[in-house]
Length: 350
Image (cartoon, rainbow, N blue to C red; front, side, top):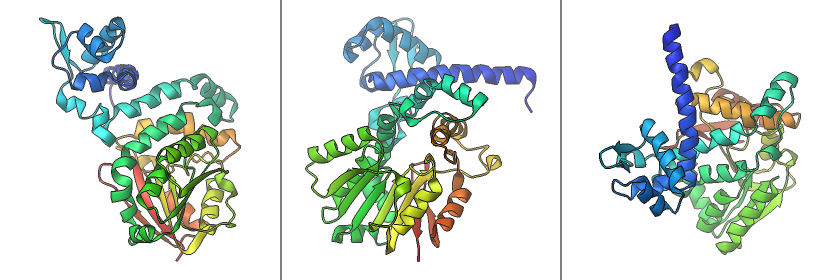
């Protein structure tokens, strides 16, 4: 147990880190990290000019980034530089290693702080409609991994699946969000047929627009609650990408997925890598972030619908139990190199 002064120091670190998370998000959204990665040591005016941004705001942002250790500053020339070893974790060129994408969750969650405090006092939850930017952020977050890994690394986790997709099978992505994953699969496997299901009008519209832009004739999108899957339509492959844990009734979703698979079908469940036991998550590299996202989004969205409030950190043990209860007799857990967020469950009924 840390002493009083040690804890005070830790609390101060948290305050500074929270502020820096907001500035990380600003640096990502404005493109400042991307711009600085290509610049030599530059003044605030030069950084602002190269970015097309207001110099006064850029100067204050640079001050925060300098005191936070993100940017290096030479007071003799009044210049700033983003070291390449930092840029490798902060720019769009970093792909799935870009941690600045995750920083956007802090500001998004802060927007519902008052509602969450009210839920602590009176129960209930904050509905999904109160998170207008969440679908877009999740799409950006997921795409960073999917663009580099879905076709070549994730789908091959299930033996023989890629070969079946090449020959032609039916696929559904439940809780498809903005539809990027299913569009990637539809483009890679033109002989297969794809269906994206979600309740978000904005997400479905984004998926359909992307499919049209890419000229994909083998994918369609439907507005449907995941908990209403009843086996009236059967698929060879069903996928969910971080879409189970925030459902109102994840048990019904998993049962519906099991009923909607062909006898030799495969369910690919991608969800948060964690233990169901708090004591086993004490050294989780993203533990505080993921429990906070759970409290202020995933759990509360479920509770707002009168749901189970499963939470982001439902974990491997609970996932295996619920998959078994839903009727899956075989569940293999796989991992993808470089993805510290997710477990990859390959579930079958025989």
